[in-house]
Length: 269
Image (spheres, rainbow, N blue to C red):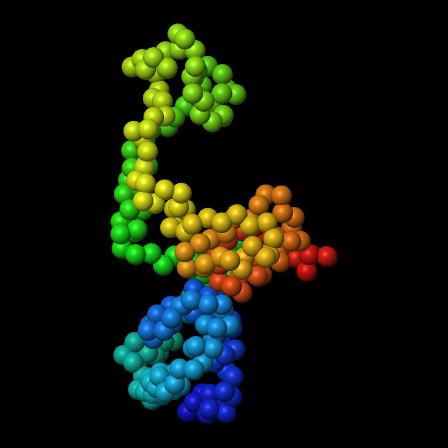
């Protein structure tokens, strides 16, 4: 009941919760309520705030009822735990050897905890990547392209096995008159030909289904459709401008394909 009163007194409480959520989570809520998904983050929050608060109050009432019932009626597991505690108190006091073994086990687990500092630093919060709004035919075509790519051989440069520098370079078409690869000898690696082309309906799309848009400044984001397009920031853009593009893209709900983890220190804050 206290949570319901707080919701009625503070009308902006839900808006604050919506602002903490990501654009993808807001769009999922809108789809559940059969509302349009397009627009900026502020527009999505305004649509959700217009929804009647009866559904949220009902959920809170159910949670309070379940919590009160659990407190009043202890489960069978709790009763069994209490019985085990009483039985264990009646048993004999553990010997010195058992105490020494327990201390060794505690030291072992403490060493493991020190090695696992990475998991303590990790927040444990996973945010799902934004996905495009695609029709069924486009999804089928993307799956077809993925299966075609698995069957495609690796196009290696001529004599890549002889010179190490050639094994790291990309594909080059052989042009020698007596080139065995150009003559399509059986023991040579295959050449890139038109027959290895993928399905043309989804040609040029990102594996996620987005259409890539190259961005060099903030004004380029205004014409991006977040439901069908994703941005890729140019390699010549510095960290200062890149951070501003990151913030603006998050406000518009646009996915960044080459996002960098930049420390906001000094002038970059």
